[in-house]
Image (cartoon, rainbow, N blue to C red; front, side):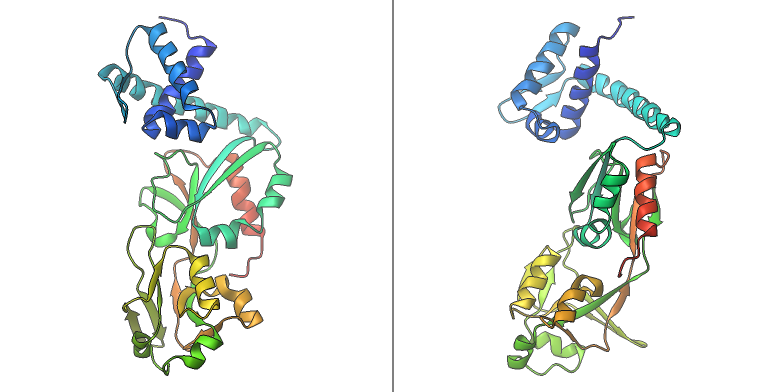
Length: 302
């Protein structure tokens, strides 16, 4: 059996990342190195092994049969290495290493933003990478240790831990918009207003759910505008552009300073809480456990 050198191990890990990302440029961006350096490393690996691992064209790369077989083996091997390194945390006083989390934009601002500075001070040996993204992704295949999403959209094969109480959804607008807009006394009146729709991470437009006692309405109007970001919908509403539907805690500041007011205040909806989730095939990393503990000890206004 051939003995592996330090260069071999490093290049095999690069090979794995290139294959997982589907190209040199994407992998280079993730690693913060040049695509040409990655390409040279792979040519050197192929030359040392005497086997071609990639089919290269001007537009794409594909694994050769040998490359696919090698990828299957090194993926398992590096998973074992990563598990072994994580196990070393049991012998450290403080967690260390890289922790990557994919998080919804609302959860990033409401749950993570208030505690990240404190976490960084408490655990300086952890390199934390936060990807704020509302689109639905496979956190495992995209190299994340965990994700934060609403509880009802988490895959069933994940371990999910609730981070807060169920969340209140309300509709809001500016007073100036309402002064010149049609009367608004019932949910049906919304069909005569400038309503700002939201396209969710799964590509669907969210229908506004409104409840009052046992009454329930689902609003799906001719949206005057559709956005895929909470902040933008709030800013449009603040600038008299219409009515938006958001988490109550997301617009708490605007409600307090009067730039937005609640519309149909007796109507609203209670939705799923934020959950942190991770693979059911691995133990909770110590750095992630520390982050979870900090979240749970912080008093959020949710």
